[in-house]
Length: 86
Image (cartoon, rainbow, N blue to C red):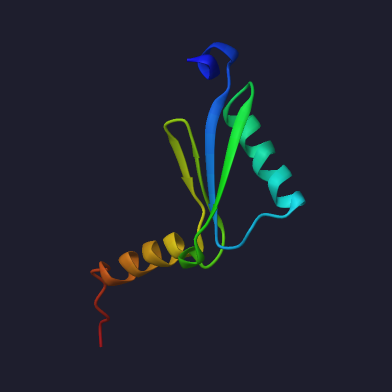
């Protein structure tokens, strides 16, 4: 309730490797575009992501991970009804 009163939102970022200072500032800039006000950032590391990040701000989720991109590409390639004409 205190966070809500002060306009602070919880944000969680999951990355494949720990964030460095420049990546952390880019994430904070991205959060600034989504939410005006304070942010309490929680960082987690998940090597299964391969690269990229997952960001959850309140009830919004941005999945910019390599794992998700590969999953989407696989789904698109396997569900393609294309049949070559020989």
